[in-house]
Length: 161
Image 1 (cartoon, rainbow, N blue to C red):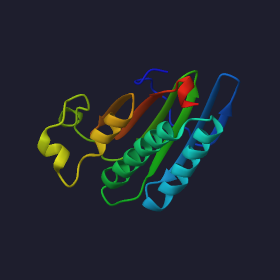
Image 2: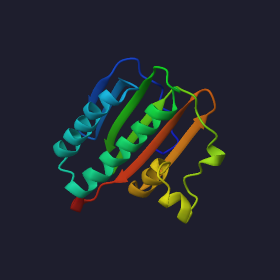
Image 3: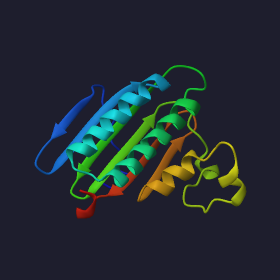
């Protein structure tokens, strides 16, 4: 799966297992109350796959930051949902967080730009920097008024398992 592959939103949550692939889809309300459930689910997947503690912590941190960004910015105080997709295929562990809220101007939020000293030290607004810093690859797709999809890719090696 490439970082820009489009995956259609799934109405039902579910799990897909095969010898080559594991995929989990969750749809949760965009409320902080549900973040813990998502993080526990992702930790359980990592544990099941024997992913090491350091890599697991990086993957979980990326999910938490993406979820908190969606919950804070997507629905502008209203209600909504966030779709989560976790998939492992070969050595690629992909985490996707997608909301259907306000979206944003991605020209202002390019994730490949090197952060400035002031951006790193500010009190808030480091979520995208963290996503980019802890994942092996990260991609942000957003349309104003149509939502945002954050895709984080982590490469698993034998030393991670």
